[in-house]
Length: 255
Length: 276
Image (cartoon, rainbow over all chains, first blue to last red; front, side, top):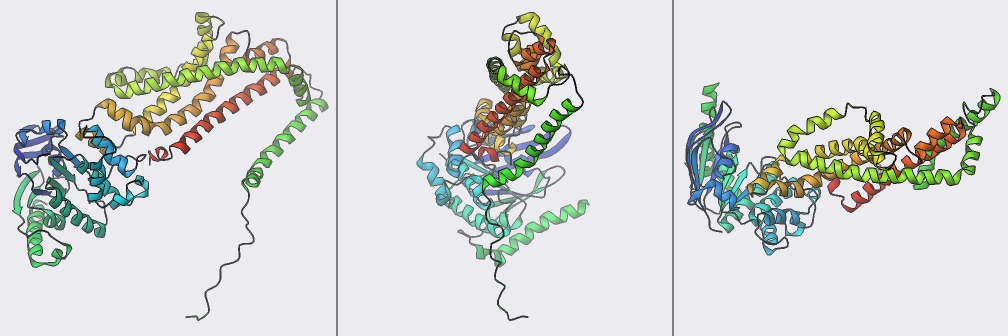
């Protein structure tokens, strides 16, 4: 699958009379890791779905590659990872990964790509376990493998590690960084964790509330591969501090 | 701080593992004892107070009746069993089909589902004479009444189960452009099966009621007919004998459904976790 970028212009979204997103432009270069960072209720999940063509905005235009975003969904180019693993409880990890792939028409159930995806997330040994036999982190790895096995052009991740404990979260971040390096996928990642955003991203889009909009874009110029010890460096702390100022100050002013 | 060695665990002498038979027996004997006492008291009371035999028969008279009319009781039991089983199977087909249709098509959900629910205020037992009028003394009115009574808990439970789909899973399926039919077949139907079984347990008991009532209303055989006929003869012992056979039939069928459910859950243990 070719790697595509996303370009969105003049995005607005309203549910009834509630304006969730207003006049929003965003570019996601092909093969980049872009984060939407913001407080709850800023519409970052909504924006994520719009960028992937899963949700159609009230106004504005989203292009994935050269085609409207809607077509990317039809062409099964969108891989989705949500906060909850949402695995089918009566299927094993491997069957879960295979199911979405076969629905998307990208191959037979017992395919090398399924095992490769499980291998990539470090779960080859647990492929035959059922969801209730997996820890929260492992289940989320399966859900990432499920998205990867479809070989999508774009990987959308909606707070995928938000429900995990801090230790698991750090190791998941490292895994994701290496998966991104290995596959070169375009990843759009939603989070409310500043550290996670800095650690993973090429670009962080800081979002504000009422209505949801992008208040700042920050390019993270830290060399890759990034490792956990980066978290203590002055470089990392510098970015974190600047992002925190962006997020906290406007909120206090609004109160 | 004490320097003594940690206390050793008490030896496991008192509670040797009880065999499942002994466990079962310990649960079984109290109700059994009460039942025996009631039957004995019944027998004695009828004797002592000299109650006329067409008001109430003694257990010994009922037992004698069962022995004397064994063949007739079995024939009638077979008739009623057929009605219940066929009616129940049709109820499953109708109930499941309605549930799938209502969940799959929004229009049917809005147009038919309220009517199905509203229909439940009709005392369906009262429909029996109408069905006899329409379909005569054949098996048909029995089957129709059974279906009318028994499909609803099947539909209701299945709809509940079909609607208990994980929203996130739905979003994922939509993200790969899967059709409503695909989502129904791959996700919703498996999720609904444990609910369906709950509906079947209710439906089978209702099916027995439907068969007996339909036989009351008009028939030439079956246990319901036998009860009805015996009552016109003031043959209380025979009424009770047929009543016992209906009850045992209901019990056996109920446990049969439970057994099928047990086999199903053993075959697909992870489906049972679907609603967690």
